[in-house]
View 1 (cartoon, one colour):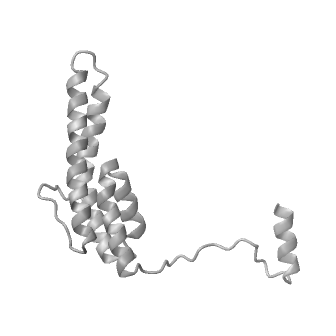
View 2 (cartoon, helix red, strand yellow; view 1 turned 30 degrees about the vertical axis):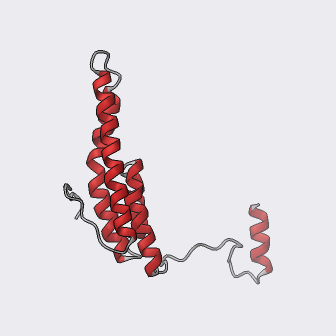
View 3 (cartoon, one colour; view 1 turned 90 degrees about the horizontal axis):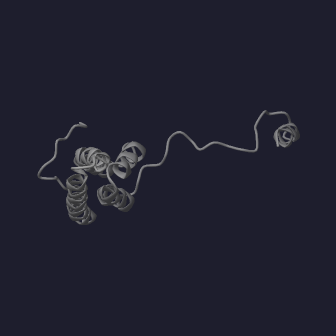
Length: 139
């Protein structure tokens, strides 16, 4: 395969360009509907924990202001319950008290799901959402 790329370069007059081109470093800004869509998905992603909102925040924060604001809000909200749920799921394996932590982990997930879906519906209407109980660790 390397020889094919070298042959392709040589056939272009020795310009040194390979047949594979990279994506430009500057991605296009999001349109208004895309901005709202990714902001909504950041909140709905709370159903799965903090990972979806973290990825959306890291990828799209410079491309859309509404997405940056809402994914940061969703990340700040979903991070502490995700950490608590991971700890509770680890403590499930403790013999005597494991069942209690299984119930706690389930309640954390149910609460996170309810708040995330409500916020996602609110943001999908184009209105910013603020969770009533949020630590806002990420500024």
